[in-house]
Length: 572
Image (cartoon, rainbow, N blue to C red; front, side):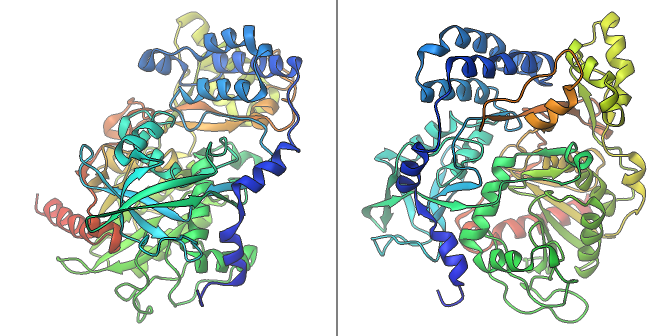
């Protein structure tokens, strides 16, 4: 632990969940009957009048959250506080939409519950095997045989595959593979900004070493992670397409498994210097840097220093078909799309110019502008950005007609007004990203490129993937069936409250500590898949199942597969 700073080590350890919960109980007042009714009476008209996926969710899942909340209203006074919040959380989670979440009072803002290891699966979906792929340096586990690479066989005495499936039923995600992917993540990391703490204070993990079975008890701990906030500029923040819970978890993983990178970023803060030619620490799922960067490009295994190290990494990777450039886009969580695109462009110029892997796995999204503007760097095609529609209701019409929202929603007013007589369910779809921005730089990378995604590639990550596929930029490799299928622009309760101020549908602030996020504008694809929604479907590609060597040796087999895919693409 010599290379682990005292600050990072203390941050990794955090506090025991059991201790945190004892303190929390003294901080959270129970809601009175009137406050419970207020919560429901706020959510019902917003879900019915603003939630952009309501028709699709009613049809696809045979659920009606509006009616469910009305029924809950009749008995909410009889419930305990915990039962009330759990009932609302269950209704909202049943929409399978990570954009749309109910956040009850917790006293745990800016916290992530963690276990000091990461669980990942390899092999086919039907016969997946689960291993510990990462173990934090500060992990205090009683059994010395519990190390990276051990295979897990049970979780709290439940067979591992069954335990993951049970957790998956409680997760968002429009497909079973997406729910499983999120369940694997929440086995050991849970954002307490957007969900309840674990039910148990510790877990009993069964694993095997050779043919010998072991069991070890590991307590949950709580670490401090700054809440996910996409942008300070209110107009920029309204262009969010992300899963904020996953963004908080991403940062917690960085703390646990890449503490040097986490520490460096903490120390640099807003005073990051211009990038210099030296190796920077990789993110959690990457192999350690092997050698420094030399010459005019990255040495094989060496990471190019980046001015945006939290969201971008680049290096050259060896494959059976020679060295290939590798660009990892961890997140689109930036508030300056110009700086993001500029840095992507610079990194691309530092990589081998003939072949490239763009890895978007586990990217929780972020600024829509940053995602869609980046596509032009990889193609000569004219990028047509994703378009977005509002649900056509009196609520959205009043919101769009409000003078307060003229800058943001004026383009949708005419079609929302026409919908009164035409009966259209949605407004006209209009791009959030200016099409001129998507062609103002042009192609930077001259070679062939392949995109890699998985079911945790979400929201703006979905938009980037859709643009990649729909403009024929290159092959798309999917670990799992498709991307996470988050097809919307998301606002939180404060943004929505401001947008409805002065209309007949404005609402008072919710009781202290209660918040929500909601999908506001529905995304549909452009280009070759024009008009196809993204929500619940995602973007499909060439299927690939991770191997054990991928998880333990820096994605070696995946890189070889991508290099072969690029070869086949160029030959076709």
